[in-house]
Image (cartoon, rainbow, N blue to C red; front, side):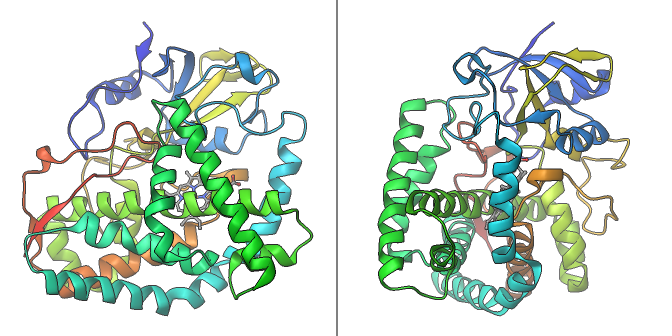
Length: 388
Ligand code: HEM
């Protein structure tokens, strides 16, 4: 039987029952994507990690117009990049960006991230309960951080936020493509400005390399999108995990030294959002019992990998002291998230300070009432009403 995506499910944190069922049945499953195309869904932790690092799978397709699609988004909805040069192109992109996002550089940012977080929490205290933690913390922090890092004016946030949201629309390709076009045009303007007046920021440093304006605009806007959409979702879902599990919240209040493992659990635990990383088989290959044919779409289900009971005992339990192994939320292999060190710094600042200043914070509505953005690439909450 072919399973239809997306999984029909309302609870904002739990893995969909059907996905859980599939995982119990095996590691590879025939599915139909939201746009009606055939794909394979991989749900085992070991297989997902192996395949993320397997060069027989890629993001591009030799015949993009005929390739199966995951959704309508212009990003990750279908094939991306040039089939013949994909690996070399990615290696070049990473060698350009990696030095700008090295753990050492990111650690130097920590005091500023702490300061920005403290400022937002002061505003939250001034606002008083009840408040929307999504609007007052999860959304502004990653945007402030990525703006400072890239050298993008924070005053432009409503504009580029709107375009980013459009880009991530998995249901409306015209809207997604229009958003991408707007974002790119905006990137071009920024590059022109940085060429005239360089600053101490990532876009100015890329301008100093031997790159064309279009390429810098594309890279910068890719970073602007990747650097905030995902982190906004992770802060919201992480706060929800803590507030929905008051015993774990209290454990972290009592022992703030657990923040590092708590953040890893916050990245692992939510069973909603993010989802399947799309790849196309570059050759016929065997996954478990299944032969995948060259050109077919394979979805590597990160949420299922993160809830594989063979690797994470009682995977649905949220446990801030859970020891390794590493979750799959930042991917693995050639495309491993370049922003992982930055995302970790942001999450550690947020949850360290939030619980220190608001140890008694609680949800203002039942968990079941909260909504996850189902039509968006990165998932995440639309609001998170809290009391304290
Ligand atoms: C909690 C927050 C984040 C999560 C969960 C996340 C997740 C991911 C995942 C799963 C991938 C791999 C995609 C694939 O294999 O196709 C990825 C790639 C990437 N991420 Fe993140 N990310 C986060 C934050 C960030 C931030 C803050 C930045 C930028 C500053 C960033 C920049 C990137 C870039 C540039 C790539 C592409 C790397 C490549 O294709 O080689 N991410 N991210």
